[in-house]
Image (cartoon, helix red, strand yellow):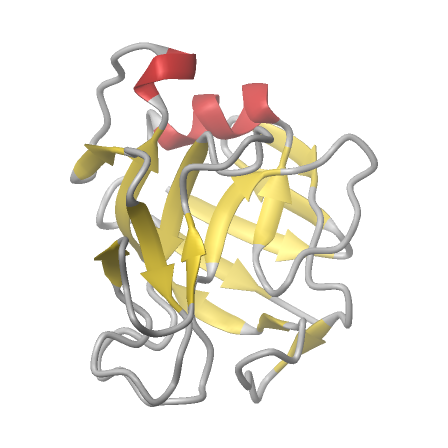
Length: 164
């Protein structure tokens, strides 16, 4: 399967979905904290989800249930930069267990993962959008019903292409 993101729309074999991108748009040169979504061709690494909200789910990618202590390191100085962590944690990290619905289901995009380069962007996910499709901190976001549908069919061969 191929997913194409272009002009704030995610095109897939399952349909076309309006898509939120970074507050500051798209970039070929992703930098931590720039609020831009990286341009390029990517795959997906893993899916994390809130079973307490969505129930038990089955995916074609490795998956894990999000618990209250789960997070993702966004500190370029940390040896755990751009990796899953658990709180308490001594460096800067995003909480994956949120009060809103944005991280109810997260598809981890393989951006800056092999190798991980400090400062080149972390926590780049496909996740649930907010009700206004407001820009993200660098992720892609679509409606919850649509990400649930997509997450069930994407696999390690799925290509995500993000174009200017």
